[in-house]
Length: 248
Image 1: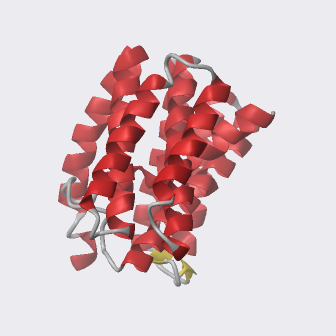
Image 2 (image 1 turned 60 degrees about the vertical axis):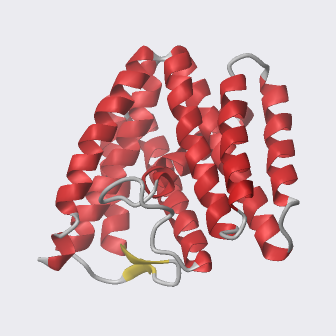
């Protein structure tokens, strides 16, 4: 029973987040952009707190500026956005030293690019974004239940000890089925790739938490921990999809 003890809070929080997310996706424009900006701003705050828990000012500044930057992305070109993201990540990282500096720069760069990717994807239409969300949700859901019902060898125990190969592969298959439903065999392959990217986003956040010695990125969402805990997978998939779109 203990392995299912978090299911109730997870489901309740997920329903609320899904309702807010679907409404914002449907509205699009500045409403969706504001939601992404706030979410990414909170993630940036969580990342900075994990890496420099003694410097609350850094965390607050990183979160606030990240949110403002993503809102500004509605009004400037892609090149300016990329330059601003790079400068933001580097400038805040320079407040730290050693490995923490590199980690803060990389993680801020990741979540800002991924957040911008979500905004750019919604600008193409709600359907594309709903597909990406469906891929991530299917991956997470299939992985959660397959991992607990089947169990078996761990996927990457040094980073994410709860993840199993059964859950990982189930996530790929579920994402491929989502791709088939949305657009056929070609999209199924892309969906499986993005499923893996979402899992790597989760692993990247797990690695940061293990480095920081914390269980959750924060305690803002019942059953899920922090905003980064809930959206790490989506941010991982969004970054890869954004890179594919830029270089395709």
